[in-house]
Image (cartoon, rainbow, N blue to C red; front, side):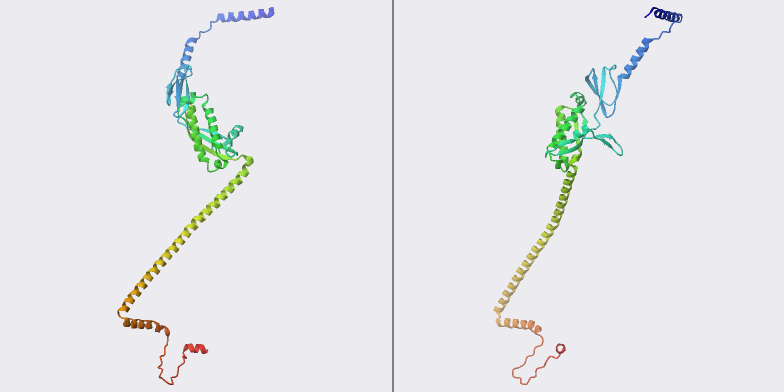
Length: 338
């Protein structure tokens, strides 16, 4: 700095100090204000509130001290004790293969490169399936959830994906797409809960639900044709079973009716035969008692039964001479003459 500039600065400073010296500055109570600010900060950092669905995990210099229930609580201020809140009454959800962007009348979903990588899986019959699923769970041990593993959320997501890939890999694509979904979900819940206990994550797995299982887009038309063919096959099988269930009872009914009719006919014939045999035996016994009377009675009864069927009968004595036979000129004869 040059000499003229230095002199100008010195003159300016003399004028400033001379002016301030003529008027004394007011004194500000800095210490009481500082104490009040410290007390206010301590008071503000000493109270915290836990929501009804949460519990508070209190840490003192990073070490677990206690767990507090919902409500208003006190802690040591100035960051000596910190609180991490964990939702233990709320059912939490993880989505795999998709992400929900907006919930409303029309829910919007997002599919990115990560979700596509989660969804693509190899099935047991070496096919590719596009699997979307959700896992619903609750935190039952907040301390284990926070401190047993480095990142419980990411760990739980990783083991959930590993379990689902294992379950899908043990089944064919047809089982996953149709009848095996419920069995796959139940097995996934069992395996995932077992791993959570093994890692001591403090998580209770409640539901594993397959949201959507589809073949990848390039092969979707072929899968649709296969599904349509299977549905037609099931329709034909059901129609055949319905026809079978309708025809077999009818045939069995007709067979039973024929059998019962034959049995009735057999019983009738046997009973009639026995009755005629008994009647013949009774007649024979009567005949033995009085042969002539019985013979005449049966002769007369037989003639009484036969003669009405003969029609007109003319009995002529052989000794009669010059008998003129009469022709039947009644209606029958007129009809024949015509």
